[in-house]
Image 1 (tube, rainbow over the protein chains, first blue to last red):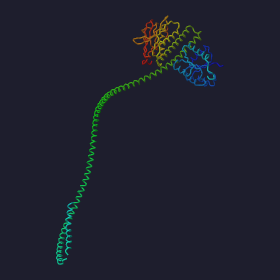
Image 2: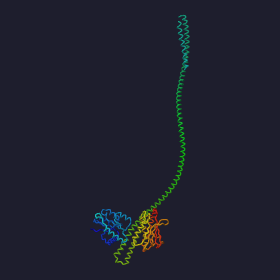
Image 3: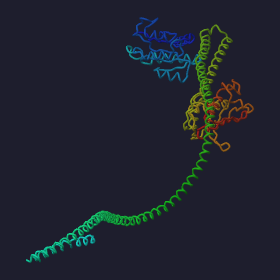
Image 4: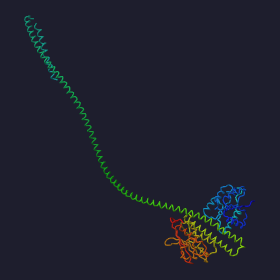
Length: 148
Length: 423
């Protein structure tokens, strides 16, 4: 059985490092694939670009998606993931600094499974990462692999 | 006519006499001498007779001539007579015709007489009609005069209306100008609002991310390098973290204040009492050990935006909760009262209060009347409340004395209509 992978879509290296540290501190040792912009995230999910030839039968257990991204922004990534047969059921969690109403409306409107705001306080941030890991990697049943 | 007949009978008389003579002669025949003498006598007589006959014939011829002339005359006379007769006949015919004409004339006159009667009757009727007509005309004229008066009045009215119209048009023109200006201002406002939204969004995203980094890595140092830091080093890092967290709070409050200003307001009948009780129970959950009595009136129906009013009450009741925190037990009240005949809502506490000298600074953003170490806060809460009350078209003020508690009053328009304001 393959390890449950986390796809972290994050352009801010500080946030990337803090997220990885929080996962480690919380003893979540699953592999984390980091995409630093929207295009890279889609390359990974669809086996294109740098990820050409990737075995697409293995999809991440959860995608942690920032909204404010260079090139393709998070909402556009979400739109394309939901539009593709291979990824339309993939668990997508928006993890962002914004708690703007319009972002929440658009995020859920495009089919996000969850919306989590990154707290400034690192203790709270770490707690949020722990909760996300526990929920999406342990508690949540993922969609059937062939259709995910 | 009778004259011509008599002439003819005289002419026949000599012939009758001759024949008588012959018959006498034949009766004297037997004595020759006597016969001869008689013959001579007879011859004489005959000769006399012939002469007589010749003069008679002359006379006859003259007579015949006369008669011829006479005949001519007669013919002429007859012609004339015939002409006269013709004339007379014609005259008779004329007369007959004339009589017929006269009769028909009379008939016509008779007819004409009946016609005349009828005509007179008709004329009488006509006169009556004309009389009626005259009355009608009189009435019509009256009506016409009335109509003319009305038209006059109408003209006056029309003039007035035209005047009013002109004024209206002027006003409309002015209003259009104002509207155009308003439109311009509105467009500017919209643009400013858009800019503010973009700014808020940017603040929300871009200012918070570095703060999270500062806080996160400070904590990482404290956790991962604790053995290499002395107490001062650790204290500095704690201060760094406190600063970033406070900045995070300020950013959030600022965003809330901006959001309150630009959120579209949606009014509905709401029970402010129920809203206040819900906020109070949330506050009690944050510090369940505290002994605070909430006195909240029942049924405080008001026409408000629920979401905004909840933020206002969270701030007002939250302040009361905060500034009574140094009391062993305290009382917080919320209700409706009457001030100067108008309803006003109040939030009252028996906490620390504030110096009324600084009351004017209460509602300014980032203005604080207490030390942070005494009572935490960003100083944005009351600015937010004021903005919410203003957006409802109401007013807010506060009364207090140091250590005597504080009462915040606010009003809301009775119907909630017409008093709404943008930010």
